[in-house]
Length: 444
Image: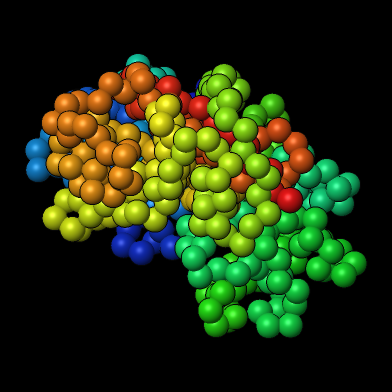
């Protein structure tokens, strides 16, 4: 049922759908986040029942959290810097919208209206959508939103094609869209899983060369596969489209947009500036790391022990913790002057999120949990063991170092969502007293 509603000489068309009627509408004709904003402007922030969210700090993970009773937003464990809110369900504080109201793009309500008064009700919906009341308690929801408008996505994709044609790769690179187990990876192959040349890392320049002069279009990027090759069998472990492996940051209409894992996201300008400033302010580790020219991170870490004075290897010394259900790596390398070094080859948001999560988990457990320290002591080499596992370590004496191996000749730069994750990791570790630093390791 299509209903025209007029407001200040502007006409709006509402589609009231029944059953599967929503499938008759094209996605790009629907006002994005209409239902979500109506809900946020109509519910009390302490009376929420369900939230759908997508975590963007790693491989995008969609979850729905439901409460057995009405709860406030803080009870849902939302990371306001990394979670994209899809839909919200809560108790309406306005009788005209019924008791329970839910919204994403579409708005779902249970109210008594009919053909004689539905226009009046839809006008109320429009007014709630246009309100900015939600900013008081839900203002953070505007920091990141997925771009789903087909015209905007096409415009952003066109900017990627232009950048490639002009060989402008300042804010355009490639990375695996999923976490990679490097122990069984020999590299990547473009286009052909068997006959093409094996590459140690994804590289936008090498990918363009592999096209052998074929003009780059979005269709070519979506149709060209990239294969992850097993070190033991030489077969493809996984494959993705080149488009899904692209990472980009572009300015469009004065707003920062980020391409991550095949999806475009719009970042509010103030939030983007805050994240960039946080990354720029993160201190550099003073330790001098040799260039990376090794067959895997394990070989490089072993090499570091002979190069960095008073260091000892902790790489792959997994600590079974929590009844054996999980294994935690304390760090890759530690030093007697209390530097805890975590190292990862650059591999996009998913790979780096894994690195930062490792630093958070081990750092927090090291300070908080005596049981973890006892298990850790069994893995520490002789002469490096903790004198008293019952004593809580003084975190301010320790430095957590995130070392990132990169082929780029430029200063260390990370995908936007990796910067967000690093910012979060830094806050949590510094809250305990740790010093947090970063370091670029040059791959040659």
